[in-house]
Image (cartoon, rainbow, N blue to C red):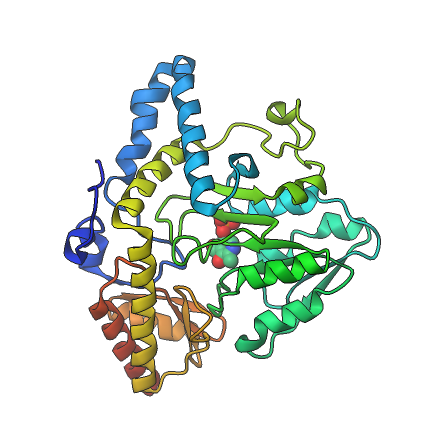
Length: 366
Ligand SMILES: Cc1ncc(COP(=O)(O)O)c(C=O)c1O
């Protein structure tokens, strides 16, 4: 199915996401909805391209290079900065294990980071590096605490652009400037921001994301973006036929080509809607959620002015609250100290209003 060239009316757009007729789905931070047509784009690779075996290789090579170019242009990086990987976690591991460390090097991250950000430094520790986990007492101070810890001697500052458990969204430009001034590499897990807010990689050395959340795609496909400065500091940890002729090449083998066909069609859809429209809508639904939560007296952990599409509300028992919302046909996640509500552009203002009202009722009776 070819996506409409410009889908700018909410009702028309929602036809592409039939699940929204059944359910108040506010859980894109767990997994985004695939649009009607994504499957056909992936099937096209199997049925019309790979059905001709290696004879069709020029076609899938052209698709790989097309999608690489599209992503590079969108993210403001060079095509050769992009390595296709299986997921965010693979990208972060590949980068962390390819960096070379000296005894005493520090790697700085927040104490409460996502496991894939924290658990990838075993090889660095074996080389004598130290992982410094910074406690974050208040969400409003997350960025400042990380910057304080990433001063002289810090080799890498590694962050989630948008924190999966609190929604706090960091200013990558400010972090990048700080890291450059201190000779520190900035490494970013971008999955909870990509497709929800603009992504500026100008000051970022290492970036990884997959596409199954805010980019509406499937599992098992992502990107690792490395700056030339970062690649200078790396010796690719994983070796194969695809990087045997280039000592700095991270791409070591075949990539998930069917997923590339799906992503190409999804980029057509999202660009047809318009990134400005998508980002503005995520912002507006967030504004509405903040206003509703103020009116209803909900305790929002996410800072109003440092956010993307994730909103975490304090609840005494997150999982029990999630289940009670699920009984009311509302999908959210239990996270951290409460429940995580994550509206995307395909949600309506009614979805947001009904979720906030239901949450207030559930919390009042728990
Ligand atoms: C911050 C963060 N990083 C990584 C992941 C996992 O992504 P992947 O399966 O692409 O490694 C998630 C959620 O699933 C996440 O919230």
